[in-house]
Length: 335
Image (cartoon, rainbow, N blue to C red; front, side, top):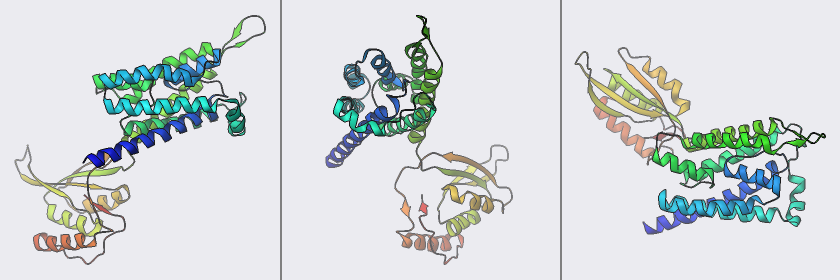
């Protein structure tokens, strides 16, 4: 158990280091040349750097070290440590990338839209930023700054979505950027435009959407809750045709007081039509379908355990009369 925890801690730390490096390169390649503020406190740091030249790397250290200490005592220690690792590596990486020698070396890779089609670097930066946010949060960590504040607020009120709290914070930063990226109008005044605000909002929205998608997971499927008097027949077809099992639950109708069997089964997306065709054969069958974002647990991989299917079908033949010599489908998973 201790070895597993140690291995996981090392892996999480390595992932946070890689994410921090990706985040630093994302800033240098797509943000710094295009005059818009990205999400969170990093956006504040970007505006300060634009106006004063004070490095985002130093600002990140000044802000995130106290925030990580706060998170250590008031949020979660593991979360705080991993966020601290990310923040330190990100800050140091930025300081290195902003040195004259390294800056000149990566200059040819920087996306400088020169005020034209700046939506593209904002889209790229937002997608990469959202990926970093999502992967970090799946490992109970964050990129620091506003993420820590949002994590604390969502801990106090779990019904609030982490990324939409972050988006609300970022909206305030976007409004502030309107006054930062103004240009002299030649008559002693300043000319302000909404372009930096729109780019900031686009970055924030896209990063929130991508991050939320990663948090929800990619192993989506469909859960069927089937109320039917034909449970044995449907169970047989699920076993034989879809190479899945199901959980049978006894239930009683509230209105009719009639005993019914309820089948609970989760199938992958590509089997949705096949499953629907099976259910269409049986009358007095009522089905509730839900989207499942991700499936956790240990399941039998049919591809690597054909004996399981054989034994299951033999058992089913004795119990409900299943007869099939079909081979298991490739990559099917049996819950």
